[in-house]
Image (cartoon, rainbow, N blue to C red; front, side, top):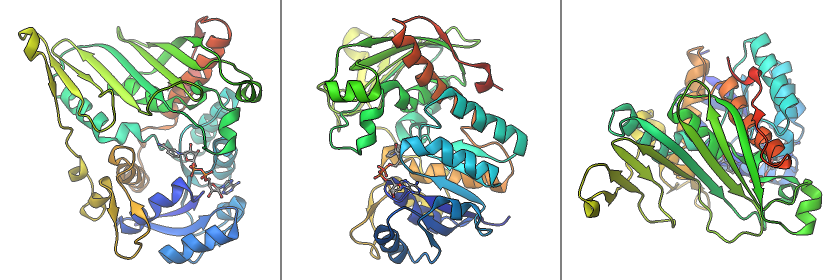
Amino acid sequence: MEKARVGLIGLGFGSEFIPIYQAHPKAEVTAICQRSKSKLNKVGDQFGIETRYTDFRDVLTDPNVDFVHINSPIPDHAPQTIAALKAGKHVMCTVPMATTLDEAREIVDLVRETGLKYMMAETVVYAREYLFIKELYDKGELGRIQYLQASHPQNMEGWPDYWKDMVPMHYATHVVAPLMAMVDGMADYVSCFGSGTINEECASRSGSKFAVESCQIKIRDSDVAAHVWRFLWDTARQYRESIDVYGSKKSFEWQLITDENPVLHTANRPEPEIAERVEVPDYAHRLPEEIRKFTRGIVDEDHLSFVQGGGHGGSHPHLVNAFINALLEDRDPFPNVEQSANWTAVGICAHQSALKGGEIVKVPDFTRR
Ligand SMILES: NC(=O)c1ccc[n+]([C@@H]2O[C@H](COP(=O)([O-])OP(=O)(O)OC[C@H]3O[C@@H](n4cnc5c(N)ncnc54)[C@H](O)[C@@H]3O)[C@@H](O)[C@H]2O)c1
């Protein structure tokens, strides 16, 4: 394979990746798929893509597609991934991998049986903030990590209707992933508390009344514990996907309000000098020249109504590049299938724990290699 040929399934969020693939020197968009013909044609015309499908099963039989990038609604992620792997296609899929442990197990088994590659397209572990903290840690500047925490409050009012069927911890990968990845750890077991009460419609549709779910994670073979929390409804707070990392020498704390800068705390300084705001650098230099511009929001001259890139901490071109390179170099992507399953399973197990009043729930072994 000299170029990896992608079939994109789901063209809402998914369409943001089209110009990145088209600009990547080793990628080619050979097909696009989404249910309504009018939007399909609009996107196809906009980006000059001839092969268009309204049924994702047709992408799976297209011999010109090496891998699918799935950006369909959450309930479709696992069934479409399983069908794609069975059809012999590699898969990159947006988060979460699945909403049940059985589906996650089937995906892991299929990848192990077929040798195909699977990567959950977790934006946070390629966002500039994560890359900055990770670099500080890897260079030894944070010292020993003592504690990790992350939050993802987000009010889903006005989002697609299926969110009313979701519980907070079934979309927890944006908080679990950066913490596990920071220490190269795998979650072992969890204890989660539900807190507060949401409106009756969302409670009855999702089968859970908790407004906030707050989960402690035990990381296997590590002395570090992690805490994550989330809500979807009826709780007042600006959206954020935050990461806090506490080290023996330095700690990173996320800003409270969007557009502030985060804070770096340095140990053993006079109290007023411990905390300082820091500017997080961009990591576009790690990418091929042709797609570097996509870490920042750009409006390109050919598609004026379409702001490309810049979303989710500039992670989109990094995700594309990571999977393309894994395919062409025939190696594991990051995250690989077990990491993707482990991060997803934490949320599923956390909700089970919350329903049992915080009882410890073990994250299943199939999520660790
Ligand atoms: N930071 C992130 O990682 C991030 C951010 C935004 C969205 N997402 C994920 O991306 C996914 C899509 O989000 P969205 O906001 O674009 O949703 P959306 O509902 O606006 O769009 C879904 C797209 O999938 C298509 N689709 C639906 N069912 C399909 C099917 N059976 N076959 C083929 N296409 C189908 C629709 O036609 C549409 O193009 C969601 O799972 C969401 O969680 C992730």
